[in-house]
Image (cartoon, rainbow, N blue to C red; front, side, top):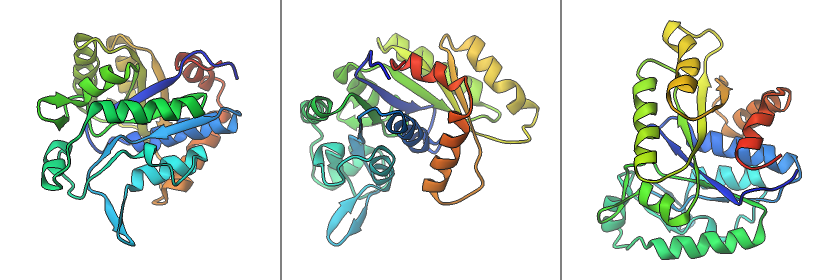
Length: 243
């Protein structure tokens, strides 16, 4: 695969829309295609403690999907205990989130890999430090974004608000991915992908199917197998700079 860009930032229209699954799927697709892909979850709140060490379950899935070095601290610069807005969780942990430290970690990862996938916390307006938002971090890293959207009623409003806000803040929107799309969509879900593709001002890069399993590893592998069999997946890879 030919490389054109260095990375992508994956954001969502809300929390719980499946950013981690989408990020892991893209990482696995690239890895399977022979791309050296790095992953990064700069700020994670709600981490669990394992053997005295804070662990991000989201980051662990990204590491597995990409084949990344599990012990690389640059993948997870800030691990926070409480499942709260990162700025609040950091305050409770007496941690100061510094954008230059995140950028330095990103640059070290970028020096080792062809392409970096950065997964954000929640959506664009999630507060990270003081008055700084996820959108400010995206601009600091200088990355374009993929917006992950849900398929059901209300998603058009949420997605258009996200893509509009991104552009207002000077962020390049590479495209939208609809995640967790049901096999038997209702009427709202049936029309959502087309409406998002025509109204968001960004290409619809994919519609990832709902997979009725709890194991995220199986979920990722199942979606990857589906995408690898779909010629339209080439659009996704081309738009993020790989082709």
